[in-house]
Image 1 (cartoon, helix red, strand yellow):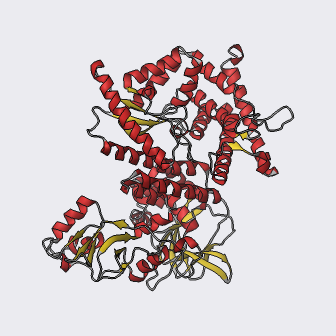
Image 2: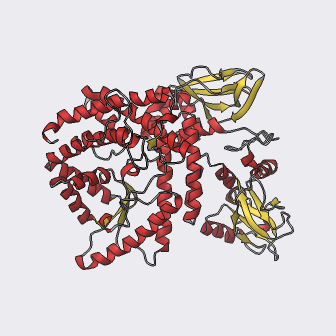
Length: 639
């Protein structure tokens, strides 16, 4: 028998993200488990500081207000209407609610069991990203009420300007796309498509703005058949336009967009309609100015045309990172978000570098990141580790082909340096001919490191075997991965030498359980959290996944999760290693943000007793995993 209620719920959910990215049968499964709640005006679904429910919610009808504070001293943070999700802490943090949810009018709400939905978060990347973005937005947004009850996300309240950053000038886009009265709608639609813009400004002979057409106008007036596509632009343009001077502040821009219910402001020379058009400011530009929405940042990265401007995006990423740490969002989610933004930045630098080349690439190639970037664990800006692999060519064409890609690599590494990724002191970058080679030469290099291992080869393989595809032909990294596992299976001694390297890392604690610090050099009397703690956990996870032929898993946390599945008897150890690594990476990131460096070298006298104890608890799994390596690979015979 059909479940008609579940089918009606399914029909509603499929209209909204993230449910629109699920399959029909998946959505029906979820819908059959949902509770339908009727909530009277003023009734609470949950209150601030109460334990989070086993369900999260989506509004079917009505409006649910999210409030911070208690009783008569409540501040409205956001309003959720049809299709909006709230109460997501059960999926992200599983801690007490930080806000109250109260019905602002009679409402119908669907309660979705977390246990039913959680499998889809792990399996569907789009679902994961949407939920994280929604959760972060609710955590930081303020609500601004207008006559129409509209909401501007990721912005400040216009009632009171509490943040001085709202008084700063906002960047606008220069050289807006324009047209004249004589153009047809078909002409301007093609122009907007070619220029990849969402609006076009109609100007007169003096370049003064007299009207605007946006994507929304084309949908509402042309796609509906209201006007013919051959009509002139003056028939559908919105006029007059709203104009401001180039000194418009963030707060002024927000107020203007809300007040006039528009998405674009025209920037003119003196701020009036009677002067020359010099720029355009959109609601998207306003969101970017706050820099606390990952999807907005990634979208903005794709629009930037100069590497210098990408530096601003990476600076915004640090603000985003800091806010996520303050909200105690799980480490795995933070790593995923920051890594996605870092990848977008690198890809954009590569695209811009390719445009600077005089000719297209002579053959297919792949740009890889290595080390912490390859493991998708680089939260702070550190030095670059990258490489290029290109398609095999005849011997006579090899030198010219390599020179082409080295020239490209120089542009890429320079662009990344401009963003803030420092040059690698050891020159482990694609601009080095040793790390810019054909696929066959890379395979030979990997085999040599494994079949005839040396101290240098063991060190390099520990960096290069954590490679990650970023741009180009992905199949090349698949071939290299096969070469790595083929070499491992032919050389038991190689894994043993990697294990020795993990055991020889300097100990974090001395005989009397005191922290061991650097004895000399630039970082004298500091604790090296990377070498003395994190690298052992990283190395062990890599060695054991190579031992088990686990392919396609480079991230340390994911490696330990996979190892726990493969070796149930050691699952407790692997889980403790994973927990320790999560604590260490967050600790290092906080230290780096605090001191504006990589966070690697820590001045112990700046730590509280609580922080020192937290660090020391992470060292127990390090000793245990070292012992496992020592026994499994019989390392006493190799040391």
